[in-house]
Image (tube, one colour):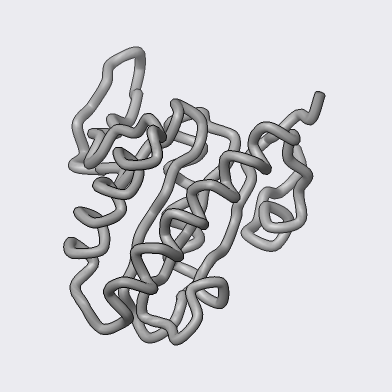
Length: 143
């Protein structure tokens, strides 16, 4: 079995529709960042990004519980996805000085547990939002 790392996840290919969706999500996040700037709490960015998704007609679920399945039983371990967008993309928000490897590991775990192909890690505590975005892909089979 091939080891799956954050580096391999960043370099994996995605379908054209997933590429377009992640562009729309990043565009929405950029709009929020331009309006608010950096330095706020993650919860403020989350609420505003939800409003922006609604405005753009992007379907999302917010603070979605993510159980761990053990021996056929869903065990609530208090994991929550910041956003699940269009049932395909997990979006994890941060407002930190820098993206630590643990945040990428967290998103990779969420992708594996939720069996979703693609995730975005977005850090709003940057001067230019594009510098705070990481795209990770899990076991994606391009068509």
